[in-house]
Image 1 (cartoon, rainbow, N blue to C red):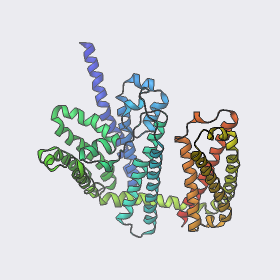
Image 2: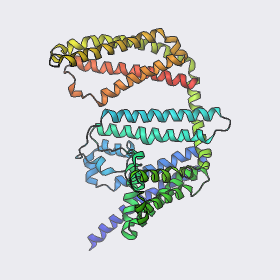
Image 3: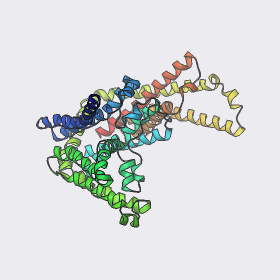
Image 4: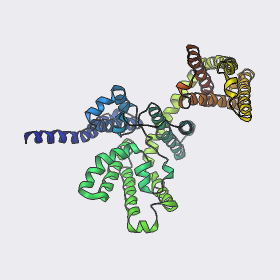
Amino acid sequence: MPALTANQSVHGKQNLTPLLLLVLMPSFAVALRRRLSPWQFMWLVSLAIFFACKLATWLRIDSHLRTRAGFIRNLGYLFLWPGMNAKPFLDKDHSVSVPALREWLAAMIKTVAGFALVSIGTRRALSETSPSLFTAWAGMLGLILILHFGAFHLISLAWRRFGVDAEPIMRAPLQATSLSEFWGRRWNLGFRQLTHEFVFTPVRKHLGAPGAIAASFLFSGLIHDLVISVPARGGYCLPTAYFLLQGTGILFERSALGKRLRIGSGLCGWLFTLLVVAGPAFGLFHPFFVRNVMLPFLTSIGHFMHQLLHGFSVPMARRFSLALWLAALGHFCVLIASFQVPSRLHWKDDLAKLTSFNRKLMWVHGGFTVLTITAFGVLTLALHDEMLRGERAALCLAGFIGVYWTTRLIVDVVYYDHTDWPQGRSFLLGHALLNLLFVFLAGSYVGLCVWRIWLA
């Protein structure tokens, strides 16, 4: 009996730990509220809630599993992964498929699109006397694309590339054909996992599924009120009302009337989901938050970038001038390496095994690649001053070259297998030097474009 009592005591402490963390860490952030601007407080309280949830999910995992996972994987889960499903992440026995190249490219495109929207928002916030709601919403959508759809997806891909079970927290939410599917299987699965584990499951034992759904969305609303309304000092309860509406929509969707209306599947379900999720979004990110938090945040980013780039405009111009000369030379170095490929990789023997058409196709593709790289080097020499001045056509060419070499690096990391490369120190050294050259080329052209666009 004493042993049973001790076990119950330990179990009770474990159950209280998440609650204590969720109270204490945000409370510490709230205590610093007066010393911070609204947007600084928003990020601080968001990080406090995030790490409280992280620790809560990590502590619930069996200690033996944490020990087997090792220091690096535990550290990665706590600080380098936004998801909240600790067990598969820490379990070394989970098998994970290698991500496809198209998934890497999709994540990169979403990240770049997010930076473009944030750039629009920050530039408009600086230029407009009274920034509009469009400016703030462009910046907010850009941040969502950068973080939730872009950077978090790239982190997932990187972990899975090394065999860690880290599924993306966003799974094509626009494809959801019901509210249940949207919130349960597609949108922010990290927070969904947390809510399901700490709210839905325990409440369902006492109030059933409808009560658990209502409690889960109430919890989500209160958390978002803390992150959105408290920093904005206005619009209280609007985020909570938004999430209660989502819960009500799910209950209606599952009701007899909802099933007769077929709003839980197909086109009707997709339209109903879009209406309920996107329609009241202006209540979730209400005007108090937009004007008091987001616009000052975007303005701060704009001032920082403006001072950074303008403050170093003269030395940056000199550095980019040198970088462009070296980049032009670098393209010809790539050509020198390319001319050695057929002999060193024994193309004559390997291509002889192909059909006549496929063999000719390889030579044609190789020839066009050589022509493209030659053009990059020659045009960089010819348009050096135009690129440096930021003339539109020359800058577009520089942007294309930067994207070309960035994509080449991505292909090397996520598509080529290191074991496929020829063995030997000379090949290993050549591979490393080529990748360093590709990094320099991509960084030079992309950096030039970013610098000139911000100075415009």
